[in-house]
Image (tube, rainbow, N blue to C red; front, side):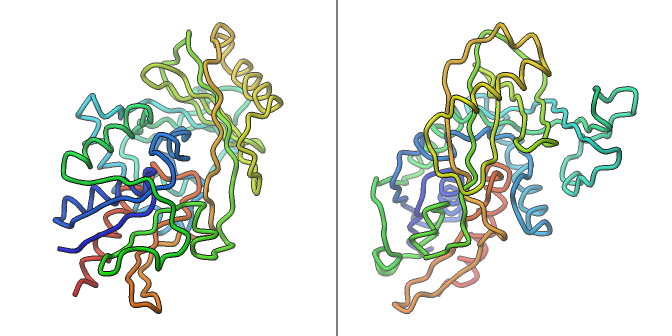
Length: 315
């Protein structure tokens, strides 16, 4: 059993903290932001690998997370549920490299592919309603004796001696680890009420992704993928384009009203950093950041690997 300090209370931090608790470790979380104010709270939070490398590791992490989310969906309070999803492509033979992780996936026959697209896949995947899921995870962590402290860390050596630190700081790793390879990819989404879709829709054939995700109480519509933008304010031009894209594909959405606009910065890195490090001070760190737009897709698989690293290096 180890004393563990997790830095960050987004989906990566919470999943690591809970997984380590379940393995008998004493865990606390330090976070600059309240869990409901993190980038994870803004995320569309559908299971789908996006802006995450390397593929070989991502495939394993995503398959583990898929199975974990399905188990969690058995509790209605979690806010996780399976949704039928259509993803469309602008060419006839797309390389869907992660398809083996989804048991229900099928390629649509040509006569079922919506115009003007050339191919599509239908799959059923977990969708996390972050307004429910993140509080559910926080409550689960607290019920097992975990403590969350609002505290910003500027250097890894500020962490308590004798603790193993798990670094889930996302974009904050740029300064905390002097890792300039971590880059923001700006995402803006709208939350709509007053209409329903019976399935999720994903179109990544344009410069900015177009997606519509039916949550329990609203519809999340996006989006943007603006690399190196750190603008956390609503961009009215993006709002207008997102609505126009949604209305063009699903005219019935014209009857909806926008209840909120949210912006988050995805922490993209050419390769996710998940590895141990021993600092010159002797402190042990396990890094777990750079998941791009796949935090909810990879969280539980990555948490499992973090726990394996910690257990294998204990002592």
